[in-house]
Image (cartoon, rainbow over all chains, first blue to last red; front, side, top):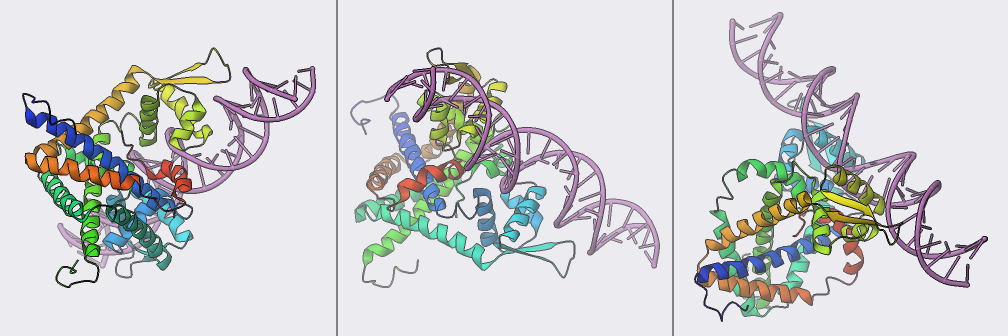
Length: 178
Length: 178
DNA sequence: GTGCACACTTTGCCCTATGCAAATATAAGA
DNA sequence: TCTTATATTTGCATAGGGCAAAGTGTGCAC
């Protein structure tokens, strides 16, 4: 908005600014949606616990070290989180018969239910929003977001981003993208 | 998916599904961007601490209870976080001369710098992505996101969302939208 | 086949974040 | 003044997190 009437020396710069602004606004919005979807289960699990459940759901049963890596936390942290989730019956833990130094961790039914509940709520919330848009707006949104996602794929994310990402992830991504 | 070749009774349903998917993908992406922007300061402040700094920046100097409410945490939690941030020189704390039971909390220069750094990184990252898009794609993105944001404004966010939101917020929104 | 190196998990120790309840200190009002 | 309400702090408990060390199995090399 308001970027159409003044001819800047570099038209792209002004556009990029408006786009950045719009993207950041949308970002806030989406985080709020995630937060609300999570609210329903926050009396049963903490956010880190929920993230752990999501990882188990996504990457299937596995051993503790792998889980810890996926979460970006120290194995000792994972051990203790599993202790608690096992105690609350959301995670199943049994020694791997083929390799007794490994534990096999998996979601219980109750664990699956929690993840599904949040995912469903989130889809529903987003669905509710897009349902208020005009059909043409919807397809425009799909195209625009697709272009955005593609543009981000070949973004270098600054040289060393790859290193920092797993480290920061655990603390920086509480919105548990499901 | 797989709903495209079969004429459903409600054509909008398939659209909504595709849009939901695109939105969720974008959401993950944006969270990753936030996470990376945050990574640069994670050796100086924890994520909750950073959120506190952002609140002080956004809502200006204020007293502890207000800050705690903005963050959605208990005042006692805020007290102790401030203790640590004061110790590390990121927050200034002084008794309000007009009301001795109140503390006035404000960012120090160092505190401001941290917030600015993250904000700048985030803008830069988003800017880098959009700069890879075609100009027409950029304006399409602005329009689409604007429509999306507007659609979300008059979304009821399910009846009781208002109640849960502040509660869940503290734990559910670590990505500190700046 | 015995032993050494490596992998997986757990435990100990320390810190931050968090909530609840109780204690303190200060204002404001009746 | 005495009481009530507000602001902050402190005590106590739990969860999340890291690092280092211990414990336990596997597997390979010699």
